[in-house]
Image 1 (spheres, one colour):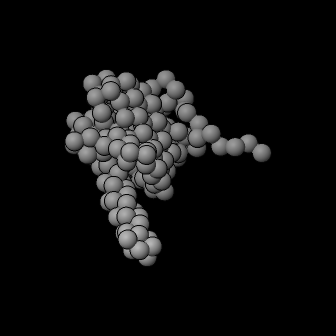
Image 2 (tube, rainbow, N blue to C red):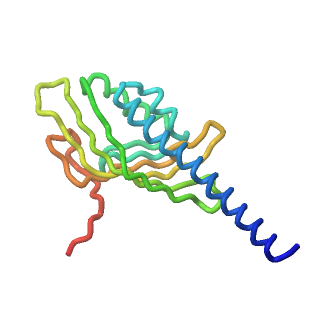
Image 3 (cartoon, rainbow, N blue to C red):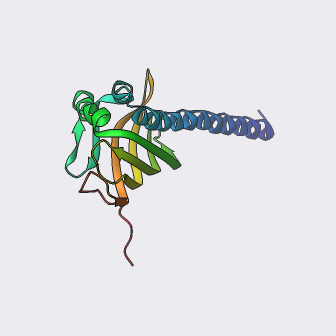
Length: 167
């Protein structure tokens, strides 16, 4: 094989790998968007199905769950605690593990909550930090951590900070 042919094969391999990464990144974006959609639509079973059986979820230092069954139980209140929510996810960064069956993901979140009780609407500004695995069903959350940059009238009183550097 000539050097030119070897280089051409290498270029095709790099292009195929980059294309595969783009396809998988699109699937991961869809997972994050499906989570937000099902949360806003009050679909707790559909939300729980997006997680692995042994998942870990932290919405605050004192609020979360280990395992899909326990996590599903935390979702029972979304229909009675909120009359509406709107979750906006952006700035998604995906870093694949070496075998391309795992990924770490960081995204930015603005969430608005209208409560059933008479109280001001709550706002959350922050980030999701996720560890994902690719399963037979597609990409799933193995770990999801919510980190706060700031809140306004938000119902969870203790937050995990984003870890912003201090000057």
